[in-house]
Structures are given as structure tokens and as C-alpha cells.
Image 1 (cartoon, one colour):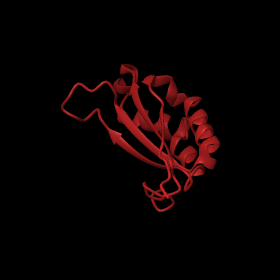
Image 2 (cartoon, helix red, strand yellow; image 1 turned 135 degrees about the vertical axis):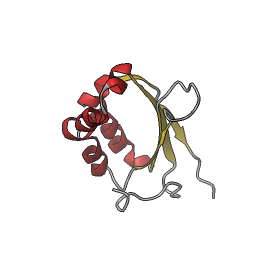
Image 3 (cartoon, one colour; image 1 turned 30 degrees about the horizontal axis):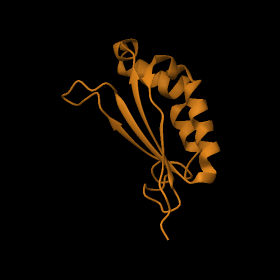
Image 4 (cartoon, helix red, strand yellow; image 1 turned 180 degrees about the horizontal axis):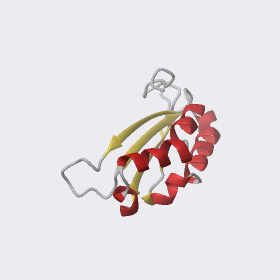
Length: 118
């Protein structure tokens, strides 16, 4: 996946989204293998993401392992060009209707736009 994904900070990627996510205690009570099966085999999370590369770049930060009481388990940063916003919305729609999403307790979808300087 990394070889197909382009890096962040591309000049044409003036749109971005920060989506913090908190998963339920039911998710975290599953074994790592059970979570992997839901993530890969049932929800096809990685396969869905691959369909939208290289247009949509992303960076995932795991917060659960931090030594703090953070309100979210993951922070995901996405960047894309304005004409790719419909594809980004479709990506989110596919992920939000997957079995994995039944374990999402809270999410915040923060959209940003960078102005293009001359």
C-alpha cells in the first residue's frame, strides 16, 4: 500500500480531513486475531483504502498506546485535491458501513482547506 500511496503535503492536495476515532470497549475486549479478522476479512478496510490511492493520502496515529487518557484511539489525517472530495466521501461511506464500524463509539469529521498562494 505504501508504494502506491503518495506522501502528504502535495501542492494540489489543498483539502484535508482530521478524523479522530474512539472504538468501543467491545472492540478492545476482542483478541488481536478477532480484530484482524473483522478489519481484513469482514470489513476489507485495507482493500477499500487501496481503491482510493494515490488520490487520497493518509497518515494514521495510534493514540491508545500513549500514556495519557486521550478521548480517541486513532487520529487519521487525510489530504486530497478538491476534485477528489467525492471520492473521499465515498471512501468514508464504505468504511462507515463496514462491520468494523459497529465498534466505533465516537468520531469527529473535521474538514480543512488550505488556500493556494500565488
